[in-house]
Image 1 (cartoon, one colour):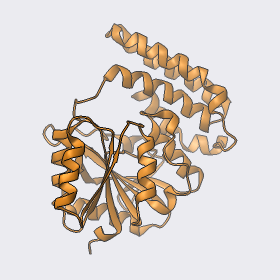
Image 2 (cartoon, rainbow, N blue to C red):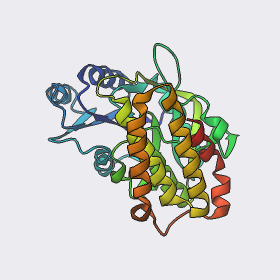
Image 3 (cartoon, one colour):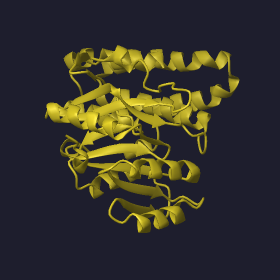
Image 4 (tube, rainbow, N blue to C red):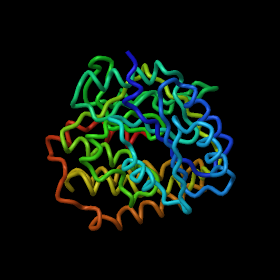
Length: 301
């Protein structure tokens, strides 16, 4: 039985009009699934398109338009607007393969009330390359009922239990962009929730090149990776892992010298944030060891 009435699909959009148009039409084609689009101050005609689409589909589509880009903080504002038990988070260039994939995510969530999130396989619709490929190798448990316990919440394709999300501070706004999904996952894990991955459910993610600066992302992700280490883990673990991570980030500079500046800036900002990012609520050594798969994934990427 479909549980789509329990789900709101939520899209965060910014200056990707063509991708957004495809995503909106694809989601609206799934019977029984409501859609909320939060636009982050687009200037490319996205706002006008969304107004027209909402007028044409008033029962299924709701739109919130901001005048400026506030980064990932917009997803926290989106959380406040959700009145269904579950939120299917999507990007403006991602959409479910089918209604049955949405149903599979819902069924997995319903089987275990301790599950806070179920991440789908996020796959490019043309190349069929999965950005989530292999994350089960770094799972701390599973498979159980087809689910792996991971530290992975893909904003482009994850079903979230709103009861659990509302126990957290949401996405860490200080991250702005990059690793904020791990931040939310760690908050949920600290509160005893499960964070899972269901490979059989598919979300198409075209990974649009529009607005993507790989070197800016490299700098942000490098910095934010250090911040996660300081924020959630004991220093006897975080410090040596940070050194290994810094070395791992610097090695590819040999092949692409353009990586050097963003990596160095990310490392400097990351180490500069030690004091600001420390918090009292952290994983114990025992819990840290149980999450060793995440550290391996961090160093593998």
